[in-house]
Length: 160
Image 1 (tube, one colour):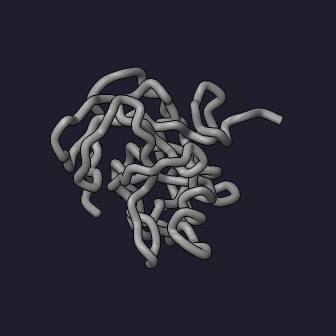
Image 2: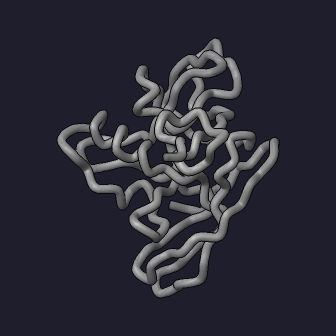
């Protein structure tokens, strides 16, 4: 996927995190923590069905990658974990209410790195719509909910 970082407003909170030399990241990728390394959503293992995979991904979702990392690179990358940042992301064409729950888009092959889809369960969600769309839209402003930020609305974001 190309580097498409579409930050629009809000407070960014960048954290420097490790990346393996065989991991390829683009700016704008949705990423998760795999033990102690950052990986893109497309690398997340598919389990049983799409909803199960989305729920498992939400439990380890970090945030939005702000730096690209090519194969062979091992330098730490900056990831935005802030629940206050607003980004513009591709979405499955639909209408949206402010607060609509969103998860990584995907299919039986896995999750996508830079596209979201509306979901009904908070346990699957990693983001909420930050704007209302009365007509079907394929681009939406959203706020993310990292599982690793204590101010996040992610159901997995807790200490203890």
